[in-house]
Amino acid sequence: MIAIKVENLTKAYQIGQFTTGTLSRDIERWWALARGKEDPFLTIGETNDRSKKGKSDIVWSLKDLNFEIEHGEAIGIIGKNGAGKSTLLKILSQVTMPTAGTVKLKGRVASLLEVGTGFHPELTGRENIFLNGAIMGMRKSEIKLKFDEIVDFSGVDRYIDTPVKRYSSGMYVRLAFAVAAYLESEILVVDEVLAVGDYEFQKKCLSKMGDLSKGEGRTILFVSHNLQSISSLCTKAIVLVNGEIKCNTNVTEAIDFYQKSIISGNNTIEQSRIGGSGQVRIQSIKIKDNQGIIYYNQEICFEFELISNSNETINNISLWFGFSDLKNNTVINSFSKEKVEILPFATAILFVTLPPNRNLMPGEYQVGFNLAKNVSGVNYEPLDMVVGYPVFRVIIGQDTGDNPVSMVSYWPQGWGSIAYENNIRIENKL
Image: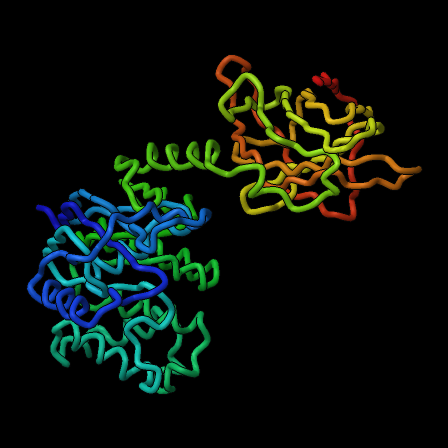
């Protein structure tokens, strides 16, 4: 039985000026929307890419979404910030209306979209529980039967008769989740607000959602950047990219698709550059002979395209770099012993080969580079600094028979950097 059916769902937002410019056109727009018609003055919009400045004042937060969710399924919604995940959940929760398309829901929807959603700040926790139950069509006697379970799960018994405006964000989320989970609803929609709670409560919530889906047959839509949580709870997942569905399949394949899209993402050198004198610029960085995939305990080959903006030869150039996971925990911090030089106004290709490193366990990593000129002794002048680009993935090679044995989970700044013996060469092209 289908619990949620979405057809041609589209949501457009206007940025900047919100009127059409004339009163008569504003009235015409209002009359069209009141009759359920499309906005007659809606111009062709742009993809909702927050990293680029657009020419249109209309952006598509969601565009032509089509999917079905069966009763009792737990579905994860995955995507970068700004992909349209929260907008989709707000439409499914009937908080906002779509610009076009239809949404069919079979059953009552309980939503946990953001801290404070559905709660009146002046009312106590007890009063808000009864208020939410009444909104969902439950009788007072039905709410009373669930009341003790809600309070026990939330762990805010001592403050249940205190106005929720005095709750911390964690207490807010605890009570809000308990209300959404225990009151009678067929569909539970949960956004990323669980990140506010502590680790113990997050595990408790995931366990409860699993029970609701598998034990009680309730349909769950779960948005999270924690892919491990998505994997443990959900059977299927939808990947959103700039408001469009790029993948809708089982959770393992969807997560794999999403991780590969991060690795081959649209990040550019310019977006990742954070400083440097500019005498030499890194134009591009490639991980040679792969598509962002590196086998565990094998060497890594980088290829840099450099451009000199100086009328003098720049020598004594060193390359400093650091590897970190996608949570910005540094794993390796190092620099090259060998020095290179680049000719005036030349374009050069710099090849760097790093030896096998057993600290890089299977997972996703990003790299930060600092191209620096040795001025004197231990003094260096930064020429170009790029952080978080590129992103690559380490996997276990099927043909190596090698198994991970150890990992430095983080690299404190006080440890300094390791000078590495590497194969580094440069080809100057005038």
